[in-house]
Length: 282
Image 1 (spheres, rainbow, N blue to C red):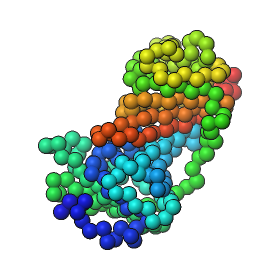
Image 2 (image 1 turned 30 degrees about the horizontal axis):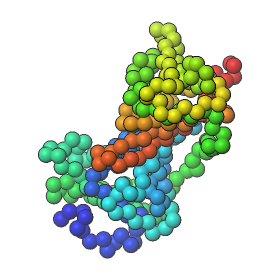
Image 3 (image 1 turned 90 degrees about the vertical axis):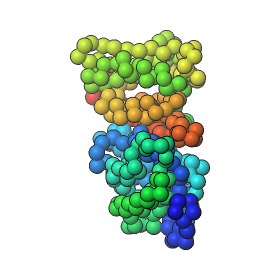
Image 4 (image 1 turned 90 degrees about the horizontal axis):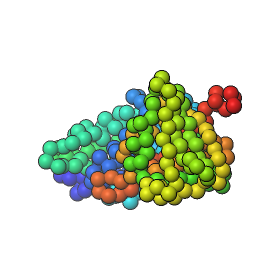
């Protein structure tokens, strides 16, 4: 019996209950924020959908936004539901049938959460085979607040991701930092690294066909630890567009637009603090 035809008598007992016909659409977005093994992620469910957050080194935060309209069924009994879960284990469950099934079959997913202290229950079905999973949930910690608001944004660029993908392949990843230069004047947008083989940089003219929007009000040259931004490359590789923003403190926001197999759109956003060592050295 498929998940879509099974009885939903117990759904009313759950704080959160959802169903999606293609579990890979959910797994793809979550993989984009998967930093490391045994990683814990904080889930916040609301009537708008799921927000999944991971943090690393208290300097970088990644958020995946999966809108409720991506799911065939989405039910919330309360305004919000928040819990922490092992993201690595969740991804293993979501991909239990493999990422490239034979015959083009897609695994359906039903997920439910009963509230504080309850496990996250998953039921996956593919070609008549059903697998049940139960994942322990934890009480969420207080999340970092980067205080990144639109009112303080001084520079913003929206561009096609292909251009940035090529640039990251050319930069020297042995560098400890990456320098991002944004300016209303030339070179407009520059990425620089300082690795074992010397300095390398890529420039992006504001009138390029790859740049959809260029709004830079002041010149900023800020360095960020490359090890903190490397995980965002996974989201970049899956995305079609990227929004790059910096605020008046030099904090960085990278927002990626990701289109799934069914053409639906989700977003992944990274926040990163400037490299303090570089700031202190001037």
